[in-house]
Image 1 (spheres, rainbow, N blue to C red):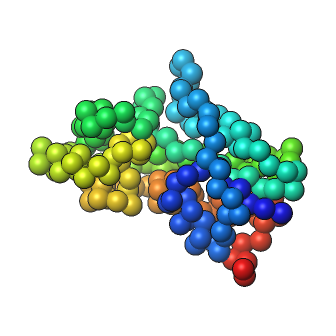
Image 2: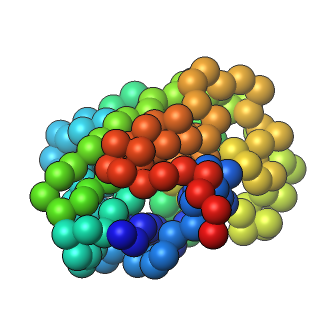
Length: 191
């Protein structure tokens, strides 16, 4: 039995390591992540995680783990910004408001599927022009849903969360541990 992580995220690998799990293979799936018309953020996130899990080639005994993290401001999905201008727009929109961070996790073994979704509320402070420009110059916004990562420099902009910190980072550990154990993968195993 092998564990295949369907993600190129170093943060997801680090979070898995806290469970004593090292993936046997890392295979980021190549799927279209465009939201469907009128798709709500939670439904979108769950669909993308599910599609990622099915896009990974694996033997029937392999365990495939995929996740998707979505930042939502109401019904608006804030994906990975295309450029610094879009990142600035996202961060200004989030400033002084609560938003949702949704992470859907899917585990597949053969034809069996296990899934869970973590939804957390996050408040970002309003950023001054200096803070916004310094953050954009850092490049930390690149490749991050909503244009920020709570575990990086943007953590200084987050005075309040309700929910799962690890879910906001990108892999809710309680949910992930339960899914992997349900699929038969022992955690905290000795290599």
